[in-house]
Length: 283
Image (cartoon, rainbow, N blue to C red; front, side, top):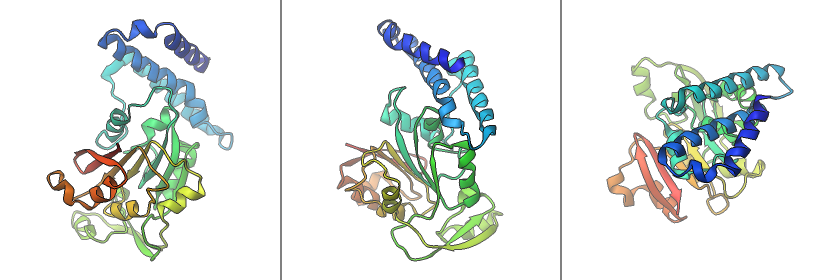
């Protein structure tokens, strides 16, 4: 019944009151929020329920309740799952319509909801591929995000076997040994070591028939980001937005940056940097 109400309300807003609602900034903001919430409610069953696990109905109830609560609290509640609000910045750069059903690829996805750059979009009906080297975390996607394709893999531009180091704080797990000593000095411990054969991002996208033009690519590979980017054939796959976590990126020396040099040849422009997250958008 709640989902039916959401669909009906969205129809009314879209077809009858659109012109009136968008005449002023305050009404535009208010009804945009309502449109987003109604859309979340409408897609909640499809996004969170799977017949393979009847307990996923609890997720549907949970997220519908959260959406209804935001109706009451209004714009004072800013929904974001990214560590530093990355998902809200992605939204502002892409400017998707409320009813868009976009596609994303996230390399280094980690937990399905905690510090996720893509979960905000999943709640709104989007889907995509989520890749991480942590098997335990990837298994969580089957319950938390059943419509996504979750893959346990190490992505790199070489097929040479790499040692994947799992740390106490799994967000820091990596194949890059540079920086690990610093983490150990800070109290982190290596919980497991595994030698794995990497896969290129292109090969993964090929297998899963990802569209050539999709909405955004998020890469957070703990120092291995450039290797991940090199493994993608940008002649065949062209996301509208690319987000990378780069430790030593200097916006003042942009023309000398390797990532910038690679992406500008494919029509990407530098869109900005916040903390260590660097954004490039297709011109």
